[in-house]
Image (cartoon, rainbow, N blue to C red; front, side, top):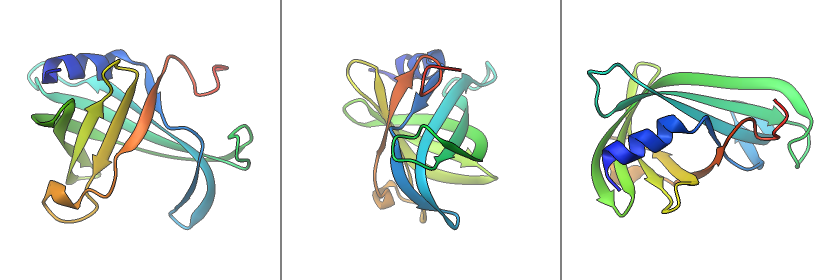
Length: 143
């Protein structure tokens, strides 16, 4: 896998989503599905994609009953060098801040793993890789 192949897969998939998970963030606690969408950036930015993150909150552990609360943020991600098999260094530029991280892709191209640092300027401070699955439409297939 090279950077150009990964860029094509990321931008060519309508949406990537996590499974339904228990989450506590921003004074909220409940069940969520996190989704991310990538789009090609300007042609002059060969290794850059526009990125949009959406967290949808649900009342139930099956993520069927939405609460009406949705958090969205957007920015850019720049892919850098290969750091291990199918995992690339990534610089996330979100809310006027650059966070170091990584993007990994499964060998079949059907899931990705994303990570960012929450502090510091070293990828060694990444806490975990969150797994997202390729979703052709919405997480429940009804949108």
